[in-house]
Length: 432
Image (cartoon, rainbow, N blue to C red):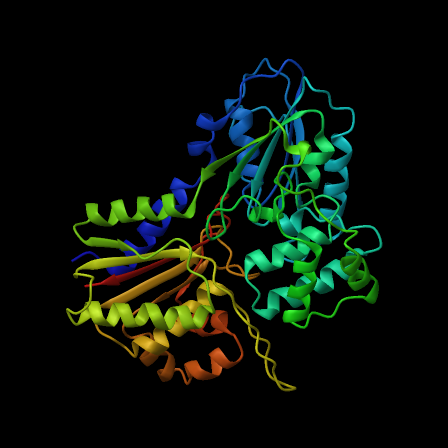
């Protein structure tokens, strides 16, 4: 019998491989312009996307630019590939001064563009934090504080990025406006449910249908503490973004080069090649991570018992972006560590209750779950029993959002290092 944990890791690798920029960029590259080609970009796949363009763009054609990616996410440079696009690194998920400087430089590079020029924008998940340029009257410290609160609030990615767009001088279509009169072609790797390009990295080159009022309502809904001046400017509508139909987007185009659905379909095909049934629930699953884990557990338990719509042996796959609401802790409680994938795995393991014949892996396709060094975690029928033998009760770890601590003690963290792409969460449950 195929070892389920080895098989699940293989499926994760297949999904990531499908989303690597070098495999997906050539078909979407535009024709050469009369003038120069400027490459701008941001995201956790930014370095790999830049290298793909450098490899595929004609060597005798002018090419220059600047892309910002997360610290440690610049891939090794292939031998013999000339560097024509500068790649710099900055912080994620909370922005820092390096991201601010990069965004300022990117905006400066748009000056002097003509109608004969082409701007090729490389956008991937993580760009919201990496491309930080606070609106006038808002400091970097303000943006950092708001970001931290949003990350802990349970707000979904669309809500968080609505706020980010309206507190920025570069996101929400403003970068496209700055590139005028040049033509802008955006290549984007989706990491958001529904593949909406206006949400990916807060849509720096895409029209924004949301409003200042929407952003203010989100801040109020999640009780985010913001400076009074920010509230006033949002109320006044002075931080509005370029809207659909605006002439600043005339002649521009957006191409989705890799999506969560494509990655899941590649994994499903690989599973079927192993001789098991494969079912994709959805690539846009949202909700509280632990609760999503419980729902997946119910489906897996039914399949293990020969009930429900899934016929074993099978793999149940899903993607999307769940959320983790950080629970307040009393003084002296150790700080929890982890991210969406680990929290999902805790919720799944708790609900499976040691169900025989069920294994699972959940990991972020960028290789980093939250801010730790793991991509996610894996679950087996004996997860709870092994943890209890060490004196670790899963309820306590869930209470303090400490998925990293729980699975680290078991040796069940999934550690890949940066993958140089990002199509969001990958979840696979193997039912024998």
